[in-house]
Amino acid sequence: MLIAAAVFASLAAALHVFIWYLESFAWTGRARAVFGTTPEDAEATKEMAFNQGFYNLFLALIALAGVVAAGVGAASVGVALMAAGTGSMLAAALLLAATSPDKRPAAVKQGAFPLVAVVLLLIAAL
Image (tube, rainbow, N blue to C red; front, side, top):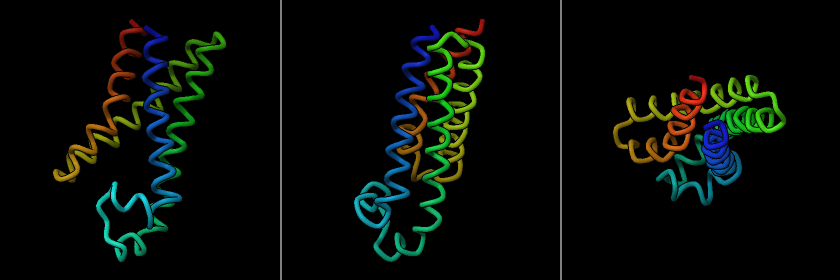
């Protein structure tokens, strides 16, 4: 179960690295189509998006550190780090769904891999 959790934590991390790229480097370009922003809105919010992108990167790095730790035999540390990273990703997706009903499809995409990872981590911990 831990291997499956690590796979889903890695997928969640990869998605969040992509979100980091969009928010931090492509916000006024390619990301506009993804997030549905106007050129004016993108320009006005690019500093906020840059910062938010790095939050996504840091969550990805925490989850990946857990995958690496579990892979080298530190299962308890790996589980803790994967749970912290993917649990935070899932919490962010749930908050997005709760506060922005029009963004629920994005929240589902953002939260699906972390949800599976968290469930598998819980099963692995039993």
